[in-house]
Length: 97
Image 1: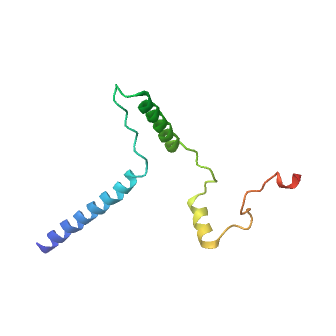
Image 2 (image 1 turned 180 degrees about the vertical axis):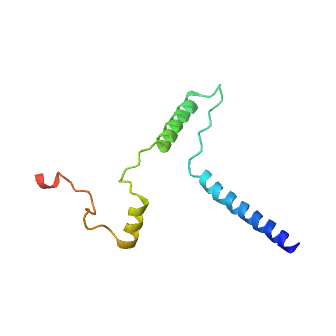
Image 3 (image 1 turned 180 degrees about the horizontal axis):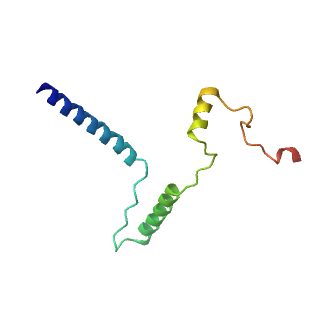
């Protein structure tokens, strides 16, 4: 009986931990803007359209930077920056002046 109770408690704890982890992923994106009522003023519609543009820009923004494989990321964490690669991007405009 005690083993059965212990297994149920472990299962409940696991489900609770999974729900907490999943709720943190739900907050990753901003909420969608709420549409104003049909008889809203033009200012409300302008605010709504600005909020929609901002929302779309946040969701679809470009992520700049070089993507690395997990092996490269782990090597960088363990051994530091690779000496064969430049630490900062080189500017081609620096030697013109």
